[in-house]
Image (cartoon, rainbow, N blue to C red):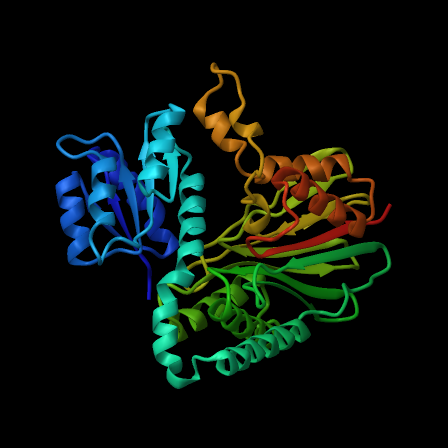
Amino acid sequence: MAETILIVDDDLDILELLKMNLEPEGYNIRTANDGESAVRSACENPPDLILLDVMMPHKDGFQVIEELKNIKDTKNVPVILVTARGQTEDKVLGLDTGADDYITKPFDLREVTARVEAVLGRTRPIKYINPLMHAMGDKFSEEGLQQLAGHLQAAAAIQKKLLPEQAPSFEGFDIATLLQSSTSVSGDFYDFIPLSETRIGLVLGDVKGNGIPAALLMVMIRTALRLLCHEEDTPASILKRINDLVVRDTEADLFATMVYGILDITNSTFTYSNGGHCYPFHWKATSEMGVLKTGGMLIGAFEEATFSSDRCSLSPGDILVFYTDGITETETGSSEAFSKNENASTSAVERNMFYGGDRLATCISKNAELSAAALCDSIVNDLTVFSGDTNTHDDRALIIIKRNI
């Protein structure tokens, strides 16, 4: 079931902007334009999260939080404050009042999405622990939990076996991969499918969310892809078939993004289609950074989704980098992003909160002379430096293909 977000703001344009940004991510959106209606809406049907403006007439965001925290049905609903205030004391007051996070206007819509997912990711275990206890009944014991843990370990082992044991080896090409899971099972995945002696299909994808539901959809997509890649002529037609399958057989809030393409060793070309995924980078030996921008819709979100195919040529020294948003949306772990001088714009500060595509492109450019595996390691090291954390808080996947000189 899709999670519900209540957006509260007295600016109707901001309400509509946030709604348009979050609905395509699979969330149910409700809105309120003042504090009184926000409290009433939250009490009548508690949402999974509240995006709450601070500066509102009659009842401000701080008052709304205090009221909701004193009501049994809403006291555990997470709140993200959205405020134009930039003073540290206002942010501290919001967190002390009970807010789980804050976003400062003007905001980057990518930051809003990332922070919403981060807060929901932290609060989902609390939300679902009581239904889990009820469902397990008498099995909710040390022995029952050990059995559940065993099932999760088995699922992780099965999923691991589905991944290629090693990257394929072709004369003239150097290929490396990475998969880091934030839980025992992952929604990110990659695969290599031999099509002939000189052609190989490759896919890198990201199922919305993580954990067991995401992993199950991953297995479903991988299985379908391995069957369809021998039946369809183009990457676009394959993604179309997979989209139709996912739309028909899954819930509306469960979808994926993915890139599927065919690497032809004979003529050094890559023919691909993109289903709503991060655009792959194409580093050229001429020291130019290109982007494979031909795209399509999310996989499994729309019945009438359309996809296009495109082709790029790989010259000696060229590099293709495929990645999931767990890399570009890694958050900084230091205060460096907020230590700008007071003349720095808010948008510039916010952009520095996430690793982002620009920093990934820079890391690729600086290390383009390395092997594919070493370049992969360099990206992981740069992520660690940026975040200050060796732990993975979101699934991450990488495929790097380098044509040797």
